[in-house]
Image: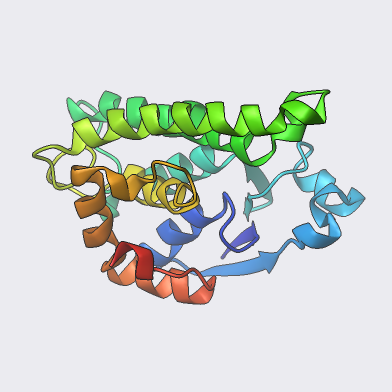
Length: 212
C-alpha cells in the first residue's frame, strides 16, 4: 500500500496519475496547503523540504515529484512507463523529465510566486511578463519535439507524458498557453481523453474542457 501525500492539482498530480494508471493499491492523504500543513512538524518529519508530494511505502518516505515518478516506474517496469535498461530511449526519458522539472516547472514556479524572487513589489508585473516569455520558449521546445510524435518519446506513453500534462495544465493561464502550439495542443487533446487522466482529474476536480 502506497500513501501519497497530496494536494489537488499540485506537484502530486503526476505521481497520482502513475499510481492510478498502474492500478496500484494506494491511499491519498490530503496535505492542506491552505492551512500551510506542509510546514507542520508532523509533515516535516516525512519531508524536511516542506513541499508536496511525499510518497510513503514500506517505511520509506520519498519526496520530489520526478523522483517519485522514477521510483514507481522502476518498481513496476511491467507497465512500460520507463524505457528498459539499454534502450536508446532511456537516456531521453531522463533528459525530458529533467527538462520538464528543471526548466518548465522551475519557470512556472517563478511566474506563480514572483514575490519570492524580488524584494521590490513594484517589479512583480515585470517578473510575471518575463516569465510568460520564458515559459513560452520552453513550450516551443516541447512543441518541436512532438512534431511527428504521438508521445514525448515517440510512439509509447511514458511517465514523461503524465508529468508534461500536469505542467501544461498549470500553463493554461500563461499569455502564450500550450494551446497556442499546434503539435502540443493536439497532443494535449489526445491525452485529455485518456481514461487515467479523466479519472484522476475528476478525483482532483481538474477541468479538462480547455483541452477538448
